[in-house]
Picture 1 (cartoon, rainbow, N blue to C red):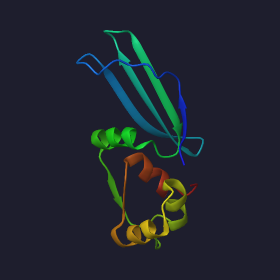
Picture 2: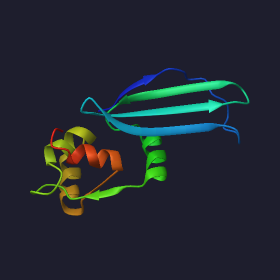
Picture 3: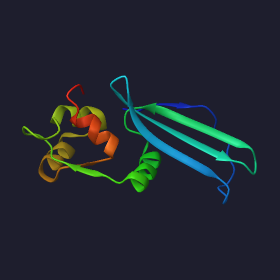
Picture 4: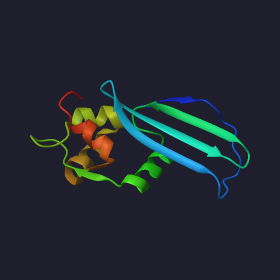
Length: 118
């Protein structure tokens, strides 16, 4: 479950000058994410961050920018089922589907899921 912190919520309608950056990283053994928006035309800034998997709208932008990695689930070389379920909050049915089809993760999520300390 992602923990989210909102620093500012005011923003303009997106214009051609708006800058938006989203990224994921691992800090202190935890999966983290951060989003930043800035509109120089209206001098508006918004920052958002949290722990765990980012909210869908942020994750979609990260996937569009960085792509995904296909990971096997379970078995000796796959992501542990319990870890996948804990990180993404999956139901049993979703875990069963992931065991069959694998899991698509961002590169940072893949590094986190496959690290021996997760």
